[in-house]
Length: 478
Ligand code: UD1
Ligand code: CA
Image (cartoon, rainbow, N blue to C red; front, side):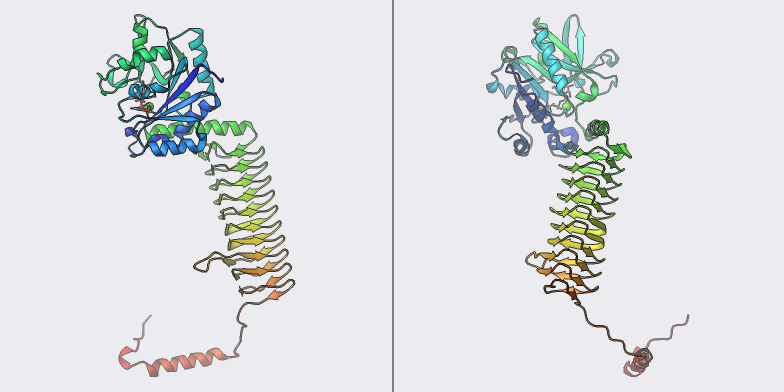
């Protein structure tokens, strides 16, 4: 839409009292994205210069917005939170375009099409104020109602509304396009003589209408403009967003076994032919290739999966990569920049931390592999632990191609096992294992023939002679 005639003001200063969390609602994530960013990103997409009004927790809000927009968004501080009318007035100095687009910061589901439609209607009707409305037949709500009587259009806030709610089922969505000149001449006339004793931005609609200016209402589906004032409304809005995302991926060939029970973030991408189980969390910048299977109750956060990857149930994969045809889980934890290479297999109760596991290699049972490079075709036995931390520093383990690490090994890092070497089960490996070598790092077993009866005799004798009478155990009758 790249429009030189519009600049936007997003209202994000409020205290979010109805959230009752003590924090600003604008930083609450919705499908992994902070609420305030839905508005700023939409405006960026539309090429509209944006000013954000900040107040409550302003530093945190500014920091979050800057992370995503660098210096392209302006910030204006509303010192006292006196209402939406006051919030807009705080930005006065920055007004220089023909039209000012004003958006509440708490409506994360608004689409580009709604803004475009608003602009088209505004322009076509040569309006002074155009604002978005929605039909809502639930009568007890906190929205401002559109009241049209005797040719005058007004917005009456819920707290000030005294008429029969059934007669006024259109609400004000909180998106307005206003002529700058009208704003300059009238915004200071808003007063706070109302039930909330706040300066209502919405009063401008009645003022414009009464002055004979053209006021246009632009209807939109309620689901796209619902506001978020409470945690329940956040939950509802997130369900709508999540449904949108799931619908999108379904249309692109992704199967969701239990779609109603999947958590999906906005920046996740999923390849065609993949199947996502129930209770799965796909978060952050997770990318899933084609034909992958993610079984139930797995969480992937900033994970990169190649094609044909199989993640079994109850796994956690964070900030890591699992390449084509590899398999992980059940109950595996892959984290901190680990890489599971092509066709590798990570099994149950295995943790990988900052480690590389080469092609076709396997660690299938109960292992901790940390700060380790594992070559190709390696088998890591059950119960193996790389001891990477000596209490002060982290140290590395290198395991060469085609090695076999026996079960229940402890590899005390820094240590290397060269390629084609074997280590015996139960070994504690403290030194380099050369190529083709079989390393035993355990005490040799000694069998003492017929020693058990002798031992028992000895122990029983000791028991009767060495214990003082008073301390002799009483015979227990069974
Ligand atoms: C507002 C509208 C209401 C509309 C509804 C749509 C007013 C008076 N009412 O009510 O007609 O139906 O939105 O969702 O505008 N904010 C500030 N500074 C303030 C007060 C609020 O920046 O002093 C910000 C809030 O952070 C929020 C936005 O303005 O993002 C809207 O404020 P909110 O209190 O949620 O208004 P509603 O009661 O929902
Ligand atoms: Ca609101």
